[in-house]
Amino acid sequence: MTPLAAYLMVAALLFAIGLAGALTRRNAILVLIGIELMLNAANLNLIAFWRYGPHPELLTGMMFAIFSIAVAAAEAAVGLGLVISIYRHARTTDLEQMNRMKG
Amino acid sequence: MSPIFYLLAAITVAGGLATVLLKNLVHCALAVTIAFLGLALLFLSLDAQFAGFVQILVYIGAVAILVVFAILLTREAEVPESSPAGRVFSKTWLTGLVIAAAVFAMLGWAVLQSAQALPNETAMPAVSVRDIGNALVGRYVLPLEIVALLLTAATIGAVIVAMHEKEAK
Image (cartoon, rainbow over all chains, first blue to last red; front, side):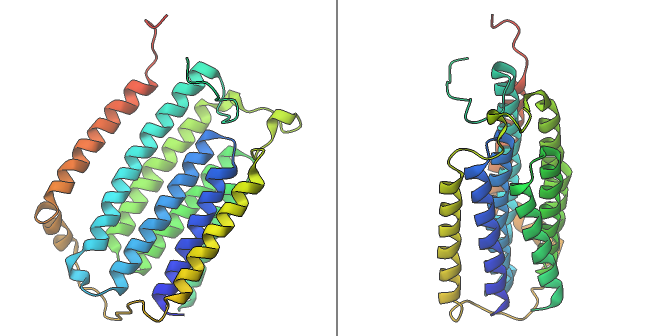
């Protein structure tokens, strides 16, 4: 197995773990963490392709990963703010009890 | 592949698995921090020093702390596990597990099938942080400005969403 293929397999495994967490957990915060794990797996792919692909001096994959980290941080801030706001209204973070949008 | 890679990969995957499987939310936050740290070390092992340290600063320094704060602020919502409403996984957990396994099988099959065609440059990329800074304010200046706008909007949006609304009623 080439080094790039090994990194891609780790990223695929991490993506599947994050997907399983996002699909199976009942707590909204854990679902957000699962989505963060999936984003991180994608970042690992980008960096691995940057390292082993041609022309690393153009920095394309590195820039993609850095902007993806920035967007993920913004997403985490807004998502956790939404969870706290919903908790204040409904007194729960359980996704199965969050079944109406009316406040 | 070096033993260091296998060690880092094992740490990362174990952290991710513990995040998904553990029952206590604070333990989950700790496990996800370990997974983020393993990923940062994997970035460092890929000669991407800047991305590795950005990962440590942003994910361990900011996102993990935010997650811990959110968990502690919503602490009262947790119900004991013995009651039927206290289950950790949702009713359709088997479906989610099957979907995740299918996605991993497909991704792994794609990687293994294309293993011969993947690029394999062995030369270490000679990229310094100065080059990254020059690229950020040169070729990538428009995305940088858009990310700045996005982060400002996200900060204001998160504060407004989580703000206590007294005049609403």
